[in-house]
Length: 247
Image (cartoon, rainbow, N blue to C red; front, side, top):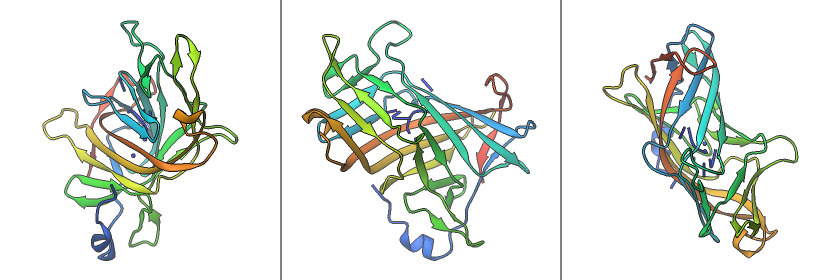
């Protein structure tokens, strides 16, 4: 659910069998960003495809989405990124952007919710992962988890419409999904170097109004899948691109 970093749209992500790897002492690997400003700014796209948020009532997709992020740079390393998703109601061409449960013209209100990516864990050269439970690195830090963070009392609201009228509303509140993973990879041959996120998050919690949106019960069966290409910048206007890599 979640043109540019999608969450996470909806805003930022099947659990891989990393247990044996983690038991061997997996190490946290921050994003290296060539920004000299003290902050690394990011912009992502949907990698030429749409992301899909699927619940028991059906799926939600958006043709275009905007994801912008930022994180403090210390010694060239970014240990945490905060990403803000945005889902316009119409595309640049003026067509309906989002479809939910078969209804075109769906509205997605982010309500100030953001995605937080803590320091990921290495699973190979130039390849990292975030998993719901994270892992404990050699320094004793628990890291490597993706989180949806919302202001108190707020959540992401998904409202499909039919002939301009609301059908129901689905609410996705602050949480750490309990299944799936996000894999980050360096994009070979890109210049400046950028990264790719492969998102397969499961067991996302949600509630709703109306049967299509899940009614008032808390459900734990939503999934989010899709890929994103992320570029890094040294300025808040996202105009001066710099290289960024996973070690």
